[in-house]
Image 1 (cartoon, one colour):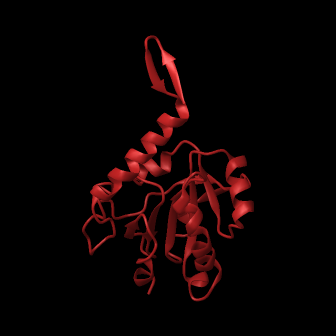
Image 2: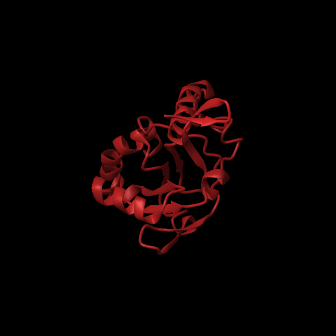
Length: 179
Protein backbone atom coordinates (compact mmCIF):
# COMPACT_ATOMS: atom_id res chain seq x y z
CA UNK A 1 0.00 0.00 0.00
CA UNK A 2 1.27 3.45 -0.86
CA UNK A 3 0.74 6.54 1.27
CA UNK A 4 0.98 10.12 0.04
CA UNK A 5 3.77 12.15 1.68
CA UNK A 6 3.51 15.68 0.23
CA UNK A 7 3.69 15.26 -3.55
CA UNK A 8 5.31 11.82 -3.32
CA UNK A 9 3.91 8.31 -2.94
CA UNK A 10 5.87 6.22 -0.45
CA UNK A 11 5.49 2.61 0.71
CA UNK A 12 3.45 2.09 3.87
CA UNK A 13 5.08 0.59 6.97
CA UNK A 14 4.28 -3.04 6.08
CA UNK A 15 5.66 -2.82 2.57
CA UNK A 16 8.76 -0.98 3.75
CA UNK A 17 9.27 -3.64 6.44
CA UNK A 18 8.95 -6.45 3.86
CA UNK A 19 11.34 -4.65 1.52
CA UNK A 20 13.95 -4.37 4.29
CA UNK A 21 13.56 -8.08 5.13
CA UNK A 22 13.94 -8.97 1.44
CA UNK A 23 17.10 -6.89 1.13
CA UNK A 24 18.58 -8.44 4.27
CA UNK A 25 17.74 -11.95 3.06
CA UNK A 26 19.25 -11.40 -0.37
CA UNK A 27 22.41 -9.88 1.11
CA UNK A 28 23.00 -12.71 3.65
CA UNK A 29 24.57 -15.13 1.12
CA UNK A 30 27.25 -12.51 0.45
CA UNK A 31 28.49 -12.86 4.02
CA UNK A 32 30.17 -16.16 3.11
CA UNK A 33 30.45 -19.32 5.19
CA UNK A 34 29.79 -18.91 8.88
CA UNK A 35 30.71 -22.19 10.57
CA UNK A 36 33.87 -22.25 12.62
CA UNK A 37 36.83 -24.05 11.16
CA UNK A 38 39.43 -24.45 13.87
CA UNK A 39 40.24 -21.20 15.64
CA UNK A 40 39.24 -18.94 12.75
CA UNK A 41 36.22 -16.73 13.32
CA UNK A 42 32.95 -17.98 11.90
CA UNK A 43 32.23 -14.83 9.97
CA UNK A 44 32.75 -11.13 10.05
CA UNK A 45 29.73 -11.12 12.35
CA UNK A 46 31.66 -13.01 15.01
CA UNK A 47 34.65 -10.65 14.87
CA UNK A 48 36.85 -13.37 16.28
CA UNK A 49 34.76 -14.04 19.39
CA UNK A 50 35.58 -17.60 20.40
CA UNK A 51 34.49 -17.59 24.03
CA UNK A 52 31.07 -17.38 25.58
CA UNK A 53 29.60 -14.17 26.92
CA UNK A 54 27.41 -14.58 29.98
CA UNK A 55 23.86 -13.24 30.08
CA UNK A 56 20.74 -13.54 32.17
CA UNK A 57 17.34 -13.34 30.48
CA UNK A 58 13.80 -14.17 31.54
CA UNK A 59 12.32 -17.35 30.14
CA UNK A 60 8.83 -17.49 28.65
CA UNK A 61 7.39 -17.84 32.17
CA UNK A 62 9.33 -14.89 33.60
CA UNK A 63 12.02 -16.87 35.48
CA UNK A 64 15.59 -15.60 35.04
CA UNK A 65 18.01 -17.99 33.34
CA UNK A 66 21.79 -17.44 33.14
CA UNK A 67 24.07 -19.01 30.56
CA UNK A 68 26.74 -19.42 33.26
CA UNK A 69 24.84 -22.26 34.94
CA UNK A 70 25.23 -24.51 31.86
CA UNK A 71 28.85 -23.83 30.86
CA UNK A 72 31.21 -26.62 31.93
CA UNK A 73 28.43 -29.22 32.16
CA UNK A 74 27.46 -29.83 28.55
CA UNK A 75 27.57 -28.05 25.19
CA UNK A 76 25.06 -25.20 24.85
CA UNK A 77 23.27 -24.34 21.62
CA UNK A 78 22.09 -20.74 21.47
CA UNK A 79 19.34 -20.47 18.88
CA UNK A 80 18.51 -16.85 18.01
CA UNK A 81 15.05 -16.77 16.42
CA UNK A 82 11.81 -14.82 15.99
CA UNK A 83 8.17 -15.73 15.43
CA UNK A 84 8.10 -13.95 12.03
CA UNK A 85 10.99 -16.09 10.68
CA UNK A 86 9.91 -19.00 8.41
CA UNK A 87 13.21 -20.95 8.81
CA UNK A 88 12.76 -20.65 12.59
CA UNK A 89 9.35 -22.32 12.28
CA UNK A 90 10.91 -25.11 10.20
CA UNK A 91 13.67 -25.72 12.77
CA UNK A 92 11.33 -26.39 15.71
CA UNK A 93 10.87 -30.15 15.06
CA UNK A 94 14.63 -30.69 14.75
CA UNK A 95 15.38 -28.65 17.87
CA UNK A 96 12.64 -30.53 19.74
CA UNK A 97 14.27 -33.84 18.73
CA UNK A 98 17.72 -32.59 19.71
CA UNK A 99 16.32 -31.55 23.08
CA UNK A 100 14.44 -34.76 23.90
CA UNK A 101 15.97 -37.69 22.00
CA UNK A 102 19.15 -39.64 22.76
CA UNK A 103 22.04 -39.07 22.58
CA UNK A 104 21.55 -35.32 22.30
CA UNK A 105 19.07 -35.05 25.18
CA UNK A 106 21.77 -35.70 27.76
CA UNK A 107 24.52 -34.13 25.74
CA UNK A 108 23.32 -30.64 24.79
CA UNK A 109 21.47 -27.75 26.34
CA UNK A 110 19.36 -25.71 23.95
CA UNK A 111 18.53 -22.11 24.80
CA UNK A 112 16.35 -20.41 22.20
CA UNK A 113 16.57 -16.62 22.39
CA UNK A 114 13.52 -14.86 20.99
CA UNK A 115 14.65 -11.65 19.32
CA UNK A 116 12.85 -8.50 20.53
CA UNK A 117 9.30 -9.80 20.82
CA UNK A 118 6.74 -9.78 23.61
CA UNK A 119 6.27 -12.64 26.06
CA UNK A 120 2.70 -13.02 24.75
CA UNK A 121 3.86 -13.45 21.16
CA UNK A 122 6.62 -15.91 22.15
CA UNK A 123 4.26 -17.96 24.34
CA UNK A 124 1.70 -18.15 21.55
CA UNK A 125 4.41 -19.51 19.22
CA UNK A 126 5.66 -21.98 21.87
CA UNK A 127 2.16 -23.35 22.38
CA UNK A 128 1.23 -23.46 18.68
CA UNK A 129 4.50 -25.13 17.59
CA UNK A 130 4.76 -27.33 20.73
CA UNK A 131 8.27 -26.14 21.58
CA UNK A 132 9.88 -28.39 24.22
CA UNK A 133 13.18 -26.55 24.80
CA UNK A 134 13.71 -23.42 26.94
CA UNK A 135 12.86 -20.10 25.31
CA UNK A 136 14.43 -16.92 26.65
CA UNK A 137 13.26 -13.41 25.83
CA UNK A 138 15.93 -11.07 24.45
CA UNK A 139 13.41 -8.20 24.46
CA UNK A 140 15.95 -5.44 23.75
CA UNK A 141 18.21 -7.52 21.49
CA UNK A 142 21.17 -6.95 23.82
CA UNK A 143 22.38 -10.57 23.84
CA UNK A 144 22.02 -10.78 20.06
CA UNK A 145 24.21 -7.66 19.78
CA UNK A 146 26.79 -9.08 22.21
CA UNK A 147 27.01 -12.24 20.10
CA UNK A 148 27.04 -10.13 16.92
CA UNK A 149 24.03 -11.86 15.40
CA UNK A 150 23.42 -10.48 11.90
CA UNK A 151 20.52 -12.65 10.78
CA UNK A 152 17.73 -14.77 12.16
CA UNK A 153 18.01 -17.66 12.72
CA UNK A 154 21.57 -17.86 14.02
CA UNK A 155 22.84 -20.93 15.85
CA UNK A 156 25.88 -20.70 18.11
CA UNK A 157 27.28 -23.83 19.75
CA UNK A 158 29.43 -23.37 22.83
CA UNK A 159 31.43 -26.42 23.95
CA UNK A 160 31.88 -27.56 27.56
CA UNK A 161 35.01 -25.42 27.89
CA UNK A 162 33.17 -22.26 26.85
CA UNK A 163 34.56 -22.01 23.32
CA UNK A 164 32.32 -21.11 20.40
CA UNK A 165 32.82 -24.04 18.02
CA UNK A 166 29.95 -23.53 15.57
CA UNK A 167 28.12 -20.50 14.21
CA UNK A 168 25.72 -20.64 11.28
CA UNK A 169 22.23 -19.85 10.06
CA UNK A 170 21.48 -23.55 9.59
CA UNK A 171 21.74 -26.64 11.77
CA UNK A 172 22.67 -29.26 9.18
CA UNK A 173 26.39 -29.53 10.10
CA UNK A 174 26.10 -29.16 13.85
CA UNK A 175 26.16 -32.94 14.49
CA UNK A 176 29.89 -33.24 13.88
CA UNK A 177 30.55 -30.69 16.64
CA UNK A 178 28.52 -32.69 19.16
CA UNK A 179 30.59 -35.89 18.95
